[in-house]
Image (cartoon, rainbow, N blue to C red):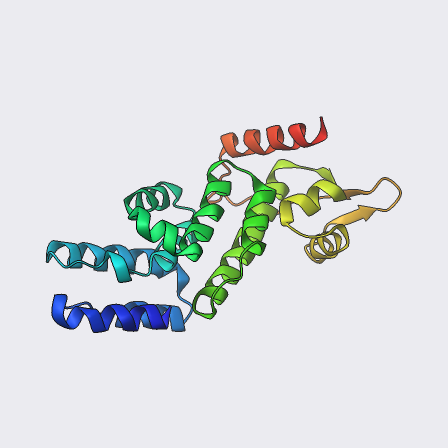
Length: 214
């Protein structure tokens, strides 16, 4: 990430001003929820000046910034705008978009496969790991909202873990396990009116489990 930013900044000496300091600071402080907006604003600013930035733009970081916020429409729009030569020459950019594709098609297990299936650079490793943790928490919230009981096998799939790790993880969240039936009983959270769950998401989750089991 830092090397990409430094390269872009050095190129801007001729092409025009490109100040990546805000992005560098956000990455260093792990303020990952701010990355997408910083990149969007900077890209608009540079594009309005007619600066050719595409060859050195940190697309992997920018894409992951949108994916981190679960803003798949913006991620998809950005992916479509990336020149084909960059998609073909930068495997990490394509690897980030593979995560986005799995999210887009609601292939929950595929998200984890895409995360594990690439050797991420040092510049983006922590960002990817932070997304993985955030995604796992989101999946846990969905399972908590959608189920009263669920099998260990399905829970492991949704959380991207093996069965032992998944069981340990949810037990720490207050769930209980029936070893004989291999079923987990979900601990429901106290209802908070601000945290309404989209019924369509629950429906999609239920359909996904149905396809797994049939």
